[in-house]
Image (cartoon, rainbow over the protein chains, first blue to last red):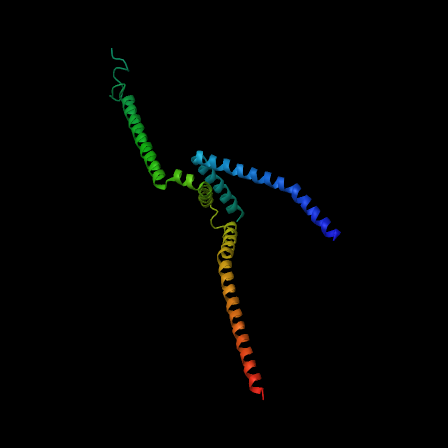
Length: 66
Length: 138
């Protein structure tokens, strides 16, 4: 019984310690996503040209390797 | 006395070549301007017909991914092992996403039918047993 209680307590402690970090990471990812979407919407031309360039480079690298 | 500049050896007036060159340059400039305007118009026409801004507003990540794909094809990466690998991975994920729910449904239906048949056979079996016991009774 004592062992089970100890394990439960440890798990709870770990959960309490990790939960805020997970929340923080989630918030950061959400804000990053929001800013990325806003940037793409504000500068569609730049982003599309950049994306085409990136794709072109990847294609070139892939064709050289292949 | 006639000087060389008054009467040049080829019989042309001294400013003739320059004037012709100027006219030609003007013509080239006009043609370039027309070509530029036409290109600009056609680019803006393509832009309006594809509705790129609208697409970016509606689905920013999808449009960027499509642009990366276009660049990848332009870069010559279409018929490469990397493409084969990506396609294989996509097919595998698609199969999992599409086929697994169907398989689950089929399995659930199969299990239901098996359970129903089991229930029926058990029910009929017990009735037969009852009849047999009744028939055996003296």
